[in-house]
Amino acid sequence: MLIVQKFGGSSVADAGRIRNVAAIIAESYLEGHEMVVVLSAQGDTTDDLLEKAAELNQAPSKRELDMLLATGEQQSIALMAMALEAMGLPVVSLTGWQAGVRTNTDYSAARINRVNTERLRRELDKKRIVLVAGFQGVNKFDDYTTLGRGGSDTTAVALAAALHADKCQIFTDVQGVYTADPRKVPGAKKLDEITYDEMLELASMGAQVLMNRSVQLAKRYGVELEVLSSLVRAPGTKVKEVSRSMEEMKITGIAKDDNVARVTVMQVADRPGSAFRVLNAVARAGINVDMIIQANGRDGTNDMSFVVAQADAEAAEKVLRQRQPAIGFADISVDKDIAKVSVVGAGMMSSVGIASLVFEALNDEHINIQMINTSEVKISCVIDAASADRAVAAIHRKFFEA
Ligand code: ADP
Ligand code: ASP
Ligand code: MG
Image 1 (cartoon, rainbow, N blue to C red):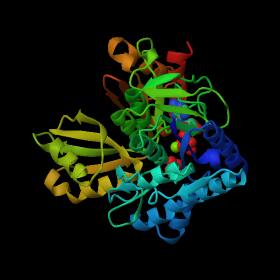
Image 2 (cartoon, helix red, strand yellow):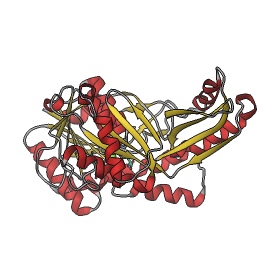
Image 3 (cartoon, helix red, strand yellow):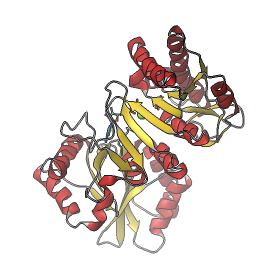
Image 4 (spheres, helix red, strand yellow):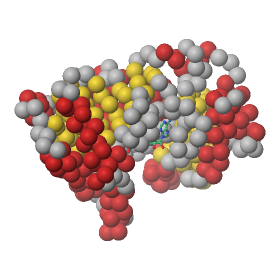
């Protein structure tokens, strides 16, 4: 079998953890499998590198930032290679570049265009364990790029797809995908299986256990994933097209995203084209928006609010202010002290009363809902950031601990 394994930052945080992971890799290799292993930077390395950068420049170019961030993953692969060498195993470490991971030119949020697998195949043919630096690739200018936070998951899935791997195992610091973040909600339950679509929603709504783009890729190429612990030997969660629990469970899980901000554009003229002008300005700046609501004023104007990623809040405000005369509105406010809490589940479609249960849970906790958005598979509420963990716990009790 060809197996792709990925180990996240906490799984390789120090020498002890690296030895632990080396033993997991060795076990699979010695069973006779071809092994490609993707590693993340150790522990908080990526955050530490970002801090180092900020000491010198508050707004460094993304190219140089990627050059810096890519070093974190390179440390991990070299150290892991040394640990495996010390065990007498044949191993080679490859950067994203050496492994043939080609991306577009979108520094810091690059997308993988293709993986040239020749070198990987050559190394596998030599019966070596191949270690690949996650989160990085190289663009058409031969510059390093990074894939966005959590991007090693995407590297792993892309390699599994390109190599037609038999298995793609994502090892992390929890035992799988849970009904809510198990570090925040002690009663969270591990799911044996989850569909790509549900996992994609959970990941997109803030469950960081898998990067959402890795799930998209997995779905597109039919790569079945298993999320499992590098510290506890136990079956994890299978992420696949159809899951056994699909029919039974009304909701699959609850996620929180506090990396969001609310932008409110006040007193927009109540006439055709206003919403278009506001959102078009934001879209043209390359900013994604979510949860758009419009509140009718009585004076011929509307207030429009929407949610953006916190990192995009200033840019959204700036572009709107620049276009204020053309759009026509009174003022803008930006609130970063919010969180989006989402309930996800494909079973929601066929059951009534899910939304009211969510609202009841928030009401029980006296938590005010600022914005609501519903689709066939999710309900999201924007609330104040300070109440977010309490909100997730309360909703979780209603659905999973009753
Ligand atoms: P890694 O470094 O292995 O990539 P991450 O920190 O990116 O690990 O993701 C694992 C973390 O995701 C867990 O420690 C957990 O706190 C968090 N998490 C959030 N939501 C969930 C969920 N629904 N199920 C499992 N883990 C979750
Ligand atoms: N090291 C990168 C990050 O911290 C990529 C990853 O861990 O997947 O985001
Ligand atoms: Mg991660």
